[in-house]
Amino acid sequence: MDFKLAIMNIKKTLSMKIICLLFVNLFLWEIYPMEDSLPLLRVFPIYRKEECEWAIRWDVCLSCMRQGEKYAQKIIFLEDKPYRLHGCMHPKKGFYSWDEEFKK
Image 1 (cartoon, rainbow, N blue to C red):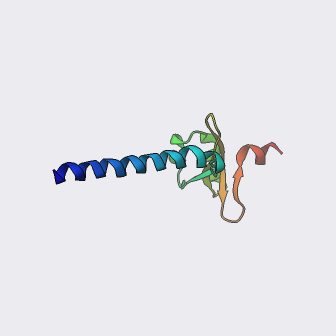
Image 2 (image 1 turned 90 degrees about the horizontal axis):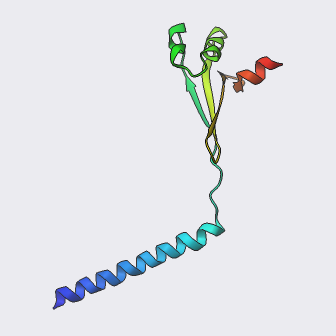
Image 3 (image 1 turned 90 degrees about the vertical axis):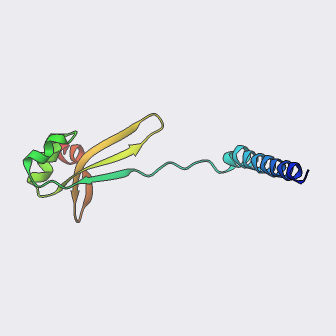
């Protein structure tokens, strides 16, 4: 008999916890919407010409290597899909997009 009462108490506490979690998720989600995520910066060390073969933009990779810099991708997460900017990582200037730099 005590075993059945213990199981009923556990069921009641679990159901109350589930109801509280649903309340928090449904109502507070609208009050505190999710923020946009920060862009991700991926930097790849490159020391030889052969290492650029795997790069998405091998021409950018080779250009960065010739300048003594590292190939980098800045990934911006949009709602529908990620968007990638390809460029170089300079120790002092930081990341700069290859397309923007060389179009000038």
